[in-house]
Image (cartoon, rainbow, N blue to C red; front, top):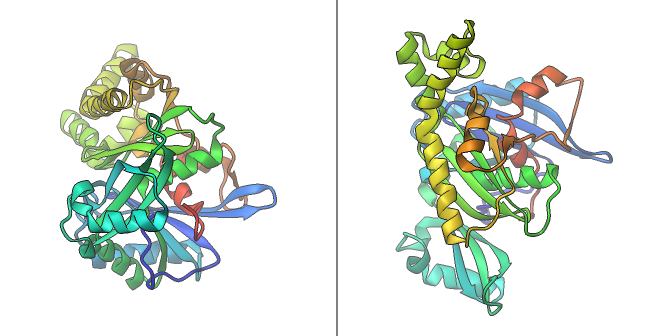
Length: 359
């Protein structure tokens, strides 16, 4: 989404690299005569403190981990697609009078203060996408603007470059989820779904209408808060609590139920923020019908969450499947691994699907 002329080369093949606060995830997606195929998928844990709420704080440590991941993957000489989220990026929907893209780019640059919280666009990388005519006024058009401070963008670029790799495209997490959704699901022009990614420290919300983003929001609350609550309650390590929130603990029926309720209690602040975001969207966009809420991210798998959110939101809720129409190389990825990585691979697959020049 954010492309800066002169610093990106144009490689023939691209690999998606999802840089999260708790792990790196690599997805190599190939376009074949039989459709898209996931050729490679690898993940590598990141130590705490390298990335905090989407902001890179230790570039050298990240670079070393990226280098390790790519060396283990066997991917060589390919361009990388990465993405921003959280405090690193601003996404805003704005309505403009009808004009061409050149005029619009100049207008956004010259009058940035009206639309974005930046006084000087020289310090900012930005891009936009025209969504189409405004529903209520055909003389106007709806536009999504994406902007990020150049220093934040450059921090990530420098870390990847120091690992010996080349960034071809810098995307946004929410839009990578949209790309993944478009490649896997059938939808009508006016069909609305919500794609939620619950990461370790960030949650991304993307409302998609007819395959195109119309509302996004990130908030700095994620699965780590659930893990830490379980860690304190049960006196276990962070790693043990991570496993408990997905797999539970052995016990009788009442003990299993009590654990599930405890997990959902710790997840309630996240669920409430998701509910508030959807309520805000409904109030802003005229209360349009939402067909489904799709969950992704490592913490989408926690016990009872899908059913709980479905009841809370009064909307069908399910785990997203980034491999509904994307096949996989059976020599590199077995079916059990594929099943386990579905929720966590969504952004990486969306990034891996990108090609130079697309929108």
